[in-house]
Image 1 (tube, helix red, strand yellow):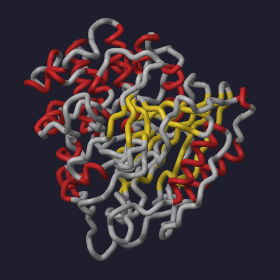
Image 2: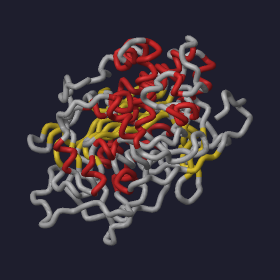
Image 3: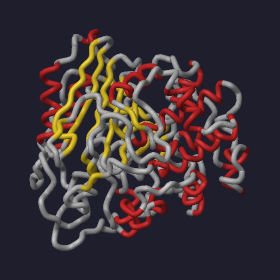
Image 4: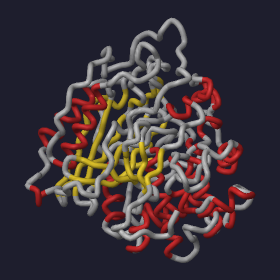
Length: 462
């Protein structure tokens, strides 16, 4: 990958590498509903300058629509300059009927990657990390041999390293299409070197720098690069240099503590109907995600963070420009699905390109996007994951009305309008008020050919 790229020079178009296993593709995928890629030529008109202020009535109705489509609970923060909307709809606990609130803490999964990337770029600004230096120069014991000489820090940041994702091997039953590992490993503490070892032990997916494949191993490796160059625990470093510097009050790494501190919703995992009724995974030891996806935050804090980042409060201009230098990521049809930078991606909305990330863990999903200057912002969390269902042949997911409702809410939040769309066929309705009373008679497993799911990061992710 080149060191820097002028703004008027085209970026490479990298195809998404095929996942080695279908379950790895399905695992934690499709958190944010399908979205078109960012376009340099798209009109960028946001906020009060466009005459679009926050319509609180419609925003509340949009959250209600997501809940009514089958998601137990959802909570959101929207900003337009100084104008703010904080809203919530549905249930935080289906067993007690406790309602969600807009300020609940939440596991944000791969949104963590932007925080980790900022910390790496801060060290780059200090001259401690060279983005185009081989990773093996920093952590030769973790990425040895020829691969350590070919993979650069930049390739870890933008997922062009070709290193395999560790998640399937960390939860081995998922590779067989079942979910027992989610329960067996709920309270396990796992070290970063072990997670990296899973990914490195697998064959290289492609020659480093030639293709694109989302891999959590990349970001656990980046945490260990931070440890080596600073001598500090990477989660403590990110807390000091990123979280506190951004002024966040409800964002933290939980370490080995499986419990979320403070008010939070219960978090339910369906795994496309395999777990029926959906199971509560609110309590979980997140050392399996670390600097790739362990953060707890709120939608309000996420907006504060991305506004500070995009306005240049966390990085010097040179490093922020590099962060927003992207590679095109294509879907299975060859269309550009998004542009991925260094821990942040860009995609299109009806009012122009936006920047952010999505994420998810067992039971919890998050999506956060901002206009390029951080003025207009949207962040949403929800507490029912993989609510979609397989079609009758088991080869694809049926369209789900909650996905369309979430896309509409995104567009309303960022643009003040929604994109007209053909209604998705409604699947068999599951009540949003409580789990199903009975499990199916026979256990279900994921089919071996389950395709990528409808999200910007429809690969193995957190």
